Length: 235
Image 1: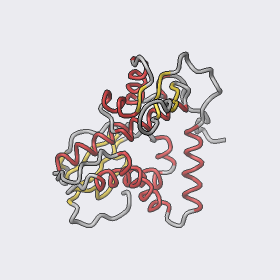
Image 2: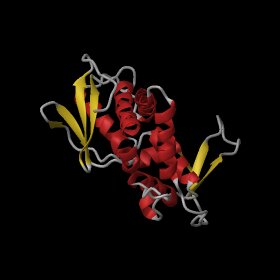
Image 3: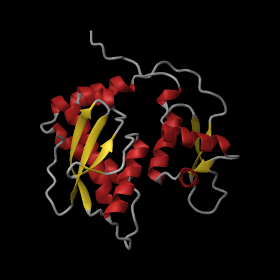
Image 4: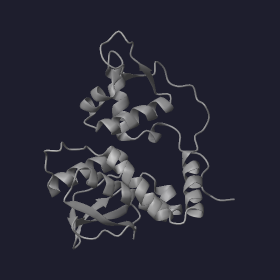
């Protein structure tokens, strides 16, 4: 039998820093609040805030409802912290599920890495803080926005380094256990996510390639100007 753990770790470690901050905001609110209020108080992009809120609902730590129609305009969805800790519903096995699904992708798709890049790009666009059509984004601002997305997801990105090309060091992989087993799919997904985030902000820079696990806790995202070719693969 494989030594891969069948269950996810229990306890507070399963809640990331950004999600814990969102939960703190809900607990401090005197009434149910919407995605916009949570985003403003946490500094997260609204799509990222909504992702964390819906995850908290799924974990039983928050509750979601639609406001009554007495207010003008379209009814909005609001959230509040659960009144009491959720009743344990058994152990979670999302890590095992991720292993199974990435394995399925690798076995059944003709080009699993490219499919992962495409899926990651769609999510990167969704999570990025889209600028207004009139705003022109320079390289520094584009990297700042990409770093914000990577931080929210849990990659712990560092400042851009010269090695000799420009790279963003990623010092924590939030999907490390799965990536070690299914590197081609998971790392390609991460590559696509970064590319999608930069494309969404119309950045003059892109991600040429992702160099995974150059050290046990370090991956390198290699940057390039967008007028250069960007091969769709993870190193």
